[in-house]
Length: 153
Figure 1 (tube, rainbow, N blue to C red):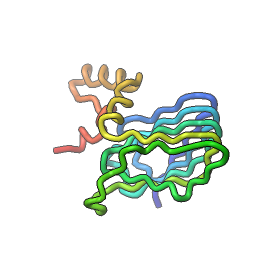
Figure 2 (cartoon, rainbow, N blue to C red):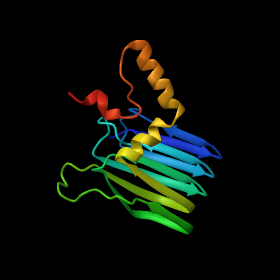
Figure 3 (spheres, rainbow, N blue to C red):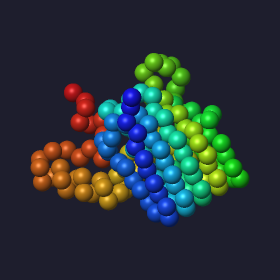
């Protein structure tokens, strides 16, 4: 049984950046708000399920270049779209992380940021500034911009 993270954004902004969880299931409820989920960490499973309940909201997913997004079970009410311009290469399916989106989205948008765009999205945040200051104080390295940095050998 995998962990479930519950994220709620009501008329606000919620950002979860860096290596923030090891959960494989997410329940996201957003109403006229923004939620940013960083799914680039090595601690996450290869199969991630995200159940969405969106009303005039935006969800931004930060993923690596090899992650595939499955939105077959996501129902759209009124206007809405998913912006996933650069889908992964289809060479090695076994090494690819899969994100399954389900639930409902009403007048909402899902943006998928990959690679360098995901890195920039994480860097232009207060969490990144705090992480850089922490890394400077402790002599470590920042991990909000690249959560895989701590897992590489």
